[in-house]
Image (tube, rainbow, N blue to C red; front, side, top):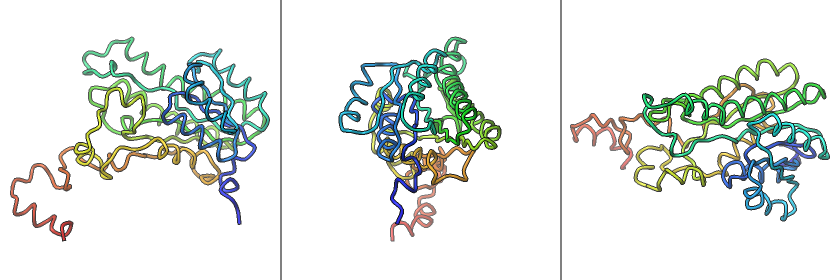
Length: 287
């Protein structure tokens, strides 16, 4: 009977997680991938965050190598690759979590400056692309198969009112994922992405308040996601369990995208004013 590690196919391999130190999705992915048998190069530009969030994983005996590097720069990427080369095992995977957007980036599209636009594209799209490019080339030259998974966003799969630069950058990650998947397939390298919905992370907590009533109205599953649920999807796409999947973006949003903005909590249109009709079409749900 194969074990979970056998099914995942990560035992003895090296996986880079860029953006591992935030205490949210990246940190959770680092732990999940390490528990699956891989040695994880856990990257953050903040040594303090590495100490705080990744240090306990190493102290618990998990195969995690903390690396302080800014992957938005060529020097930072070179530092990461050097660490991977000096780690036991073959380089196999990359998870691009680094990116995001602070509260100050929310604004009407008419107010977005060139510097706002460039900053969000650099933090999200450029970091994802050049980190993926470097790892893919390392794998290609070595003749090794691999798997790259990037974090997009539901904002890149739909409209992103008042957050156009972030949403467009995340949509570009989806486009880059598809093109790289085609180019790299012949080298045995798969490229996929996940698009999280609203997820409970330290970063999102800075501007998304807890509101269970709102979550029930907006999200089909009635709640926000947890980092472990994003990590599970990422681990699937990274691993051999998805060995015939490439160029895809998996929405992990609890059904947030399924709820049209004009739907009420009972899934009926807010435009329905006839309560008798509303009651009739929802009766099965109350039986």
